[in-house]
Length: 500
Image (cartoon, rainbow, N blue to C red):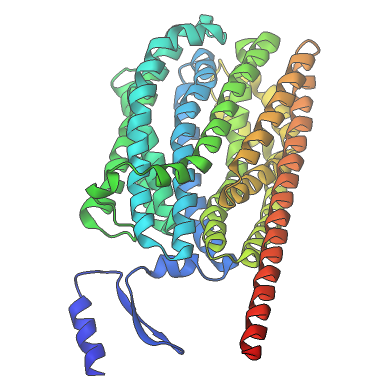
C-alpha cells in the first residue's frame, strides 16, 4: 500500500491523465494512455456515440446557424449577393473538403491505434496530419488564386463576377487556416474529446456572427466582409486548438516536434482513408458547381438564390445525421482497432435507428413550417417575391432528408473500416446520376429538377447504405473464418501437447 501511495505521489502534477488501474487478474498496473474521454470511447458503443453526439450536434448547430446568419446578413445586399454566395459556396466547401478529408483520415487512423493500445503511433499520426495540411495548402493556395477568375466565368458567374471574386478571394488566401481548423477538430474527436472540439467550433462561430455586421456594413466591405469574418474567426479558433495541443497539453494526444518527421507508414495510414474522403467531398463540391450551372440555365439567378437558401435550411435538418456520423467514426474505428466487430455492429445499428426517427420528425416540421422558415431569406422587398417558390422547394426537399442522412452514417462506417474508397465510389455514382437528372430535367422545368433531385438523393442513400452493410458483413465473415482457424490451430497444439 505504501508503494501505491508513493506511485501516486510521483505521478501527481506531471501527467494529468496518468493514473493507476486495478485489475482483478494482474493486480495494480500503470496506464499512461487512458483518460475519461478515451474510457468512454472504448466502452459501450451506444453510450460512446451519445456522449460524442451531443457536443458534435451542438457544435454543428452553432456552425450552421453561423452560415444562416452569414447568408441572412448578405441577403440585405440583394439577390445578386445571394446568387454569388450560392455560386461560390462550392469553392469554399472545396477547401473545407480538403481539410475534412485529411482530418477524417487522421481521426480514423488515430482511433484505431487507440483501440489497439498504441499511443505512440497515435501521437505521431496527429503530427503527420498537421504536416500534410501544411504541404497541401502550399500547393492549393497559389493554384486557386491563379485560376479563380476563369473558373468562376466557366461556371456561369459572369453576371456576378465582381461579387464572386470579392467573396472567394479571402477564402483562397487563408485556405491553410480553414483546412487546419478542420483537422484540429477531428484530432480532438479522435480521442473522444468532442466537448473540446465543440469549444473550438463555438468560438469560431460566435466570433464570426459578431464580426459579420461589423465587416459587412460597419466597415462597408459588403459581401467580402462576410468572407473575412469567417476567415478571421477560423484563424482564431485554430490558435485555440493549437494552444490545447502544444502549450496547455490538456489533450490525450501528445504532439511533439519530433513527430513531424515524415513517416511513410503513418502518412499512408492517413491517406488510405483521407484521400478517398477528400476526393469524395471535393467531387461533391465540383459536381455542385455543375448542378448550380443547370439551375441558373433553367431558372436564372433568382432560382439560384432561393435554391441556395433552401439548401442552407435543409442542411440544418441534416445536422443530426452529420453529428451521428461524426460520432460513430472514432467509436467504430476504435472498436475495429480492438477487433470487436460486434461492438461496431451495435453502434452502427443504434445510429441508424436513432437518425431515422430524428430526421423523419425534422422533415415533418419543415413541411409544416416552411412558410415561416423562408422568411429568414425573403425579408427584403427585393427578395420577398421568391418566397412562394422557396416554400414549395422546401416541402419537396423534405422527402429525401431521411435517406440523405443514411449517406452520412454509412460513409462514416466505411471510413472506420478503412473502406473509404467505397464511400468515394458511391458518392461519385450518386453525383453522376444527379447531373444526368439535372441535365435532362433542366429542359423541362425547375419543378422537374427538384423532384429529380429527390429521386437521386433517395437512390444515393440506398446505395451508400447497401455498400456499408455489405462491407460490415464481409468483415464479420472474415473475422469468423480467422477465429475458426485460430481455434483449430489451438486444438491441434493442445492435442500435440497431450500426446507428448
